[in-house]
Length: 337
Image (cartoon, rainbow, N blue to C red):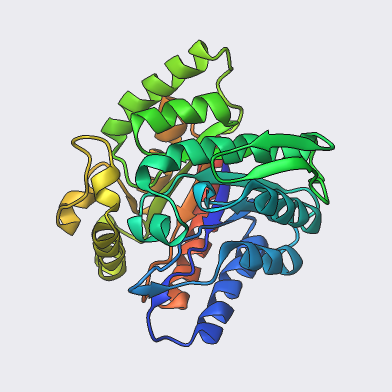
């Protein structure tokens, strides 16, 4: 199993972002030192009450400071962008990191972002598909003629191509059943979200496998899942230490409307202790390791994207989490695989 670290870089409004950037870079460089495989950075706009640095510039800096790590976009909100821009930006990033980029992409769910970029929620799925098809063509064809609902490629070319041939892996993030079918059809894998319960995952994994069969595609060689992770001596201690920060993060998700786009019966408009059930990887090293082994055996998950840092958490606590994961959990899981 591979282990990647997601550096959301989400910090409370009003904090000194130069200082917080230094903290985030400490996480990146420590991830490389500890033997993590990759680094993930997400992307949101108008993210009040949080502030964060944007994805592509951050990953470009990480490519220089931690050159052994895979760089994973997790996720590019594709309907908000034009394909030629994304194709050239990400091809540049793939060259900068020596051909270790992963193109993670998704639709998004926040009206404030859709409206700011000139589209509606109803248009988002169509724009996502058009943009993804166009980016793939720009990476694999010399010149592209294509008319989309929000762009025209008139014998356009991507100034640079990715180092990876034919292109970087495409991970598609999906919550809803229709989006999971889309991931099966258009992506190299489904990038499993951190919010759904394992009960929902079991049902949706069956849906994903049926969709792969329908489209004549094999089960992916790499199946990544992002989860909230906190490890301590005991489960009670892990819960006590994580709660003040993880609770704030999920309160913000509810304010953004994330829970309203989850599958039926799997919203997270609940108190913290209800959210814990069947959702997060929180506990002792043995508990977390055994749950990861179970995820690998039950579902084929073989890449954990670990979220260990939430708004307001001291960086020292996140660094401790990374150390415990690297020294006590990762060897256990890898030896079982």
